[in-house]
Amino acid sequence: MAAEGGGKEMNEIKTQFTTREGVYKLLTHSEYSRPNRVPFNSQGSNPVKVSFVNVNDQSGNGDRICFNVGRELYFYIYKGVRKAADLSKPIDKRIYKGTQPTCHDFNPLTATAESVSLLVGFSAGQVQLIDPIKKETSKLFNEERLIDKSRVTCVRWVPGSESLFLVAHSSGSMYLYNVENTCGTTAPHYQLLKQGENYAVHTCKSKSARNPLLRWTVGEGALNEFAFSPDGKFLACASQDGFLRVFGFDAAELHGTMKSYFGGLLCVCWSPDGRYIVAGGEDDLVTVWSFLDCRVIARGHGHKSWVSVVAFDHCTTSVEDGDLPAEFSGSDEDFHEQNHFGAGRDRANSSHSRLSKRNSTDSRPVSVTYRFGSVGQDTQLCLWDLTEDILFPHLPLSRTRTHTNVMSATSPPATGQTPSTLTPNSNTGSSNSSSSTTTFATLSLHDSRKERHEKDHKRNHSMGHISSKSSDKLNQLSSSKMAKADAAKTLGTTLCPRMEEVPLLEPLVCKKIAHERLTVLIFLEDCLVTACQEGFVCTWARPGKVVSDGPHENTLL
Image (cartoon, rainbow, N blue to C red; front, side, top):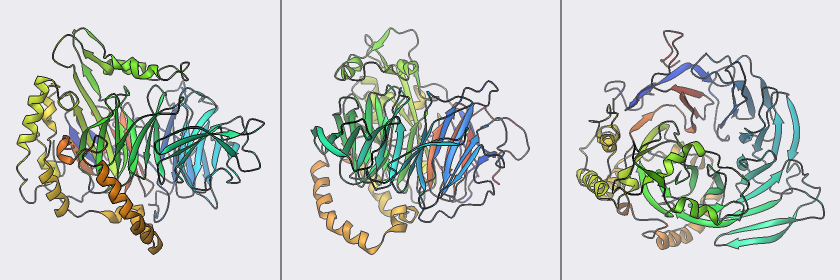
């Protein structure tokens, strides 16, 4: 891994970084923000979020971007790596009073050049359906806050549906809505539909159709984020109680759970083939969980504070199986057969089915690499590779590789060594998938504990730290005994293995890329997009994708 900046201070903001594919470059002319480009005073405000949609515009400029900054919501044509952003011409701009937008989501099924359906969640609990192209506000859900009064943490259209959407709140509840139904003038009455360990699903009792259709109560504390599987049949929920819970969505059945090493889980995402889930949160780790085996298979340590976003890179994730005869592993269909309610919904990402293949006759696995990224409140971007020596440790070749990585990493690093120098980089320029599996190292528990005590743990980046009052601290103290007891029960089990029981990954890249905490990471075909709490949305061109239109395109403004 190349060290850009050649020995300059660690806290300098990077404008490019190198992986085995080449150099990723920040395109300053493609930066989106408020039109005045003034950094937003983010103290106490909700996270900046970004949503994309493609409207299939014949001109080639089909991408549209929406982002929120404080009380404001912006909607632009996104020109990406092709042309400079023109911030003076937003398609739509909205300023809200009394509440702030917290999250949003486009419906890709209904998007056209003339109309898009955008859901916006708010800090006071409402959800708005707007069309920023027609500049219309069609509906407001939970307007009287009779359904839930707490902040909306995540809103998503149900995959494959033009009318159903799911909303999560900081109360720990999720609600299923239909855009065609009203919310009623009285508080809803519920009837229990299904109950399980730390979750319950209720239907709404009503003589006429009304919202919400369903109410899910999941875990304890806020439900921070949820994500649908690529085929739309499963739902992964990351909660403040530290649990990842994965449900069969239509059957409302719990498929599996995982517990963070400590603290709440803040973010979650699926691999493109639906086989793995990555979660991040207040333990500063990224945790990789196998959907098929329902267990933690790896953790990644690179961030110095809470991990706010995790995302898979579908473009860099790859399978190389040559001419070997390959077939789906037997359990791929098996785990979908339990779910009969979503039979009419097609697999959303059938093009990624090759990732689900393994050679059934040979002792070697296919050569597979999953690339994912994470950003955190430490202002750092980390990129990670998940390779077959971690995914298939029971196979002879893989066991040897993993053992070598663990042994080579057991000696403590020299004092003053930075994380970037801990990663072996002899193969970073190699395109050979088998040799590039050593571009991350596996650390021992002893080293990670020593590092954790020596480093400055940047809690001051955290929203929780900034906004904490004495009453919050009292509440934390009263619940800390219970939390410690629960953690003691799960530590060392399959829910939460000890640090030495699973491989610990080192990031391929770990770079400081912003002044304020990072809140967005999205992988697109020719670039990746990040955003920070100051309200700047940055475009990083993938290797070979830079369109030169100025001498200063890769320097920071």
